[in-house]
Length: 390
Image (cartoon, rainbow, N blue to C red):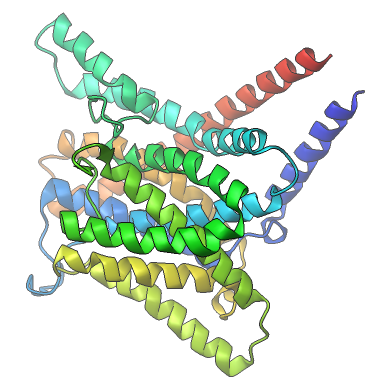
């Protein structure tokens, strides 16, 4: 057996071992829990977009909304992605060339998403043609052609596309931004994460807030309509995550007493509470920038483990919720087809409840089928590489 095959088997055994023992794989309970929380917030925001709901429990619309600002959850995922990107880049500073390391990194990131997206997207296209009748064959063909960019997660690149799975714009923007940021971190190392990243964040976040009135929004092109706001937003916030990594690394080296750790815990809870409250508020969108910076602080504290929350959240259930967030996120648009058509005449509460039930059911299917596709693809790629080097 070749050394390459031995190495592959060792990597596979390690992966299975880490899956069986999540507490040993370096997972962060705070982050995993908040992944699920912000995933649900984003889904509630999209439900609100379709139903235009009033705030619950008789709350005043002057201060509260039914998750009207819930898109702030996307910022959480971009920042976390930037942090984890920096962790990987730090490990690969001197192991491979920049091109080889970037290729390996992007392959892993893409394959952690694409098999699940692919199955969900195919189901979404089928539901689209099931629920929406086409006037003629030409219209059906044109709609199918317009769905191609979304299949390759390029729906916000400027190519005209039909929004079958509109929530997936985030995944495409994230991958494009990572393809830019990762080699920059490898090439410039600490200069990028400690200097360029925070400067880019301050300047571009300020620009987006000033020029467009908010951080959110995915269909706008900025800089005289030359750059997709979705991509610029992803790039900037992933840069912010790389800086969070540097701050968290410093904090990890400091030994804090119990009183200080309690204070950090309260600060972490408060910094998560602010964007969550903002998500359910009716405040002006220009204040979204405060929620963003609050998230950067909260995520930094979570990853630095200076508080007490992570030790309380180290359990398989929390890790399960963190893993499930991707599949629940991918399944939401499939559930919205049913909400708009099958559940249209249902009472409001029942409609929302059934939407989540369908979402979770599709999430299970996406996970099962996506795992099969990923396993098959990995096996084929491994066979190809083995034959190529033989």
